Amino acid sequence: MTAPFDAVLVLSFGGPEKPEDVRPFLENVTRGRGVPPERLDEVAQHYLHFGGRSPINDLNRDLIARLEPALEAAGLPLPAYFGNRNWHPMVEDVVAQMYRDGHRRVLVFPTSAWGGYSGCRQYHEDIARALSALDAPEPMVLRKLPQYWDNPLFVAAAADAVAAARAEMTAATGEPGRLVFTAHSVPVSADRTAGPPDDGGHLYSRQIAAASALAAAAAGVEDYDQVWQSRSGPPQIPWLEPDICDHLESLAADGVTAAVMSPIGFVSDHLEVVWDLDNEAHETADELGMTLRRTGTVDTDPRFVQMIVELVADHVDGEPDLSLGCGDNGGPCRPRCCEPAKRPVRRG
Ligand SMILES: CC1=C(CCC(=O)O)c2cc3nc(cc4[nH]c(cc5[nH]c(cc1n2)c(C)c5CCC(=O)O)c(CCC(=O)O)c4C)C(CCC(=O)O)=C3C
Ligand SMILES: [Fe+2]
Image (cartoon, rainbow, N blue to C red; front, side, top):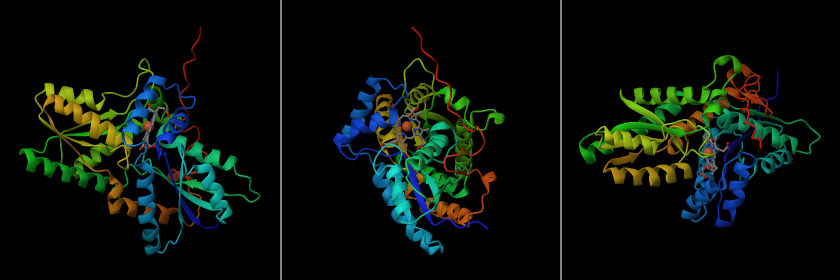
């Protein structure tokens, strides 16, 4: 019999909260990842356009404010803490605080539903980093909850957002519009190595495709597209394509005049959503004379909170059931799962 878990850590990406934060935040995100300086300047402008404050931290605080009472109501009175990979509150500081508060067994809920290096493995690395920074005499266990891209509550929330946006589009234009799912692009090499080594790779893009299919089916939509957004990195390195803006152009060329975007790859309306979709994609659509709408993300849907409660309930007793896709203390979900792709060595 193992001891039950006694706290939850909502682990996220993090975002700047004031203009002076923007540069150091971007440096944290891209440290050693070969993102060109021009791209950083460009992305800094996106943040500065919103006064240097990303919505992401407030959205996560709001989620936690809903989660704690929902856990309590389910008979699971665990406190929920907030920590990030790239900005304050930093995961290292929060894990140290949790230790000081007496917590030794923590369930980690990541704000990414997906497998793959950026969507999963990197969150394990964050946990490992926080633990190695911890100066603690007693052992502490941090167990990352499993990927939830196919959880019925996640799918239902995404599908209802699709149905609502299509209904609005129909009211405005007389037709529901072409449905287009989007998710964060990743380097093709990272997608190839996503998943356990004996599983054929491409776990991230397969999950995005499958989640889009589930949400479309639940919304009663047969024909839809699934594309990518927010690529970065040097242009000579291939990332998953097509990009949403290029895709809107091909749709327009095929005579499509209305489209609904569903950012299925994200759980909240953070900067990648409000800039890349609400700003850039909308500009493209305006130029093309296309009517464009975006669905909400699952964040505001009570079923998303309920999903987290159920994940906690499934794992709170503390039995180590690693076949369910958890990982302890930064160990991957399965051996060698989603190892980072080897970076090409540049010579000369
Ligand atoms: C798969 C994936 C998710 C979804 C899973 C998840 O949600 O975790 C995600 C989420 C997010 N990405 C975000 C922001 C950024 N991502 C960047 C860069 C990158 N993302 C990547 C992948 C992903 N990213 C990759 C492969 C890179 C290249 C550099 C590297 O290999 O790390 C950069 C650098 C500048 C640039 O865009 O080049 C920024 C600023 C924010 C916060 C938004 C806000 O502040 O509100 C969020 C939630
Ligand atoms: Fe990103």
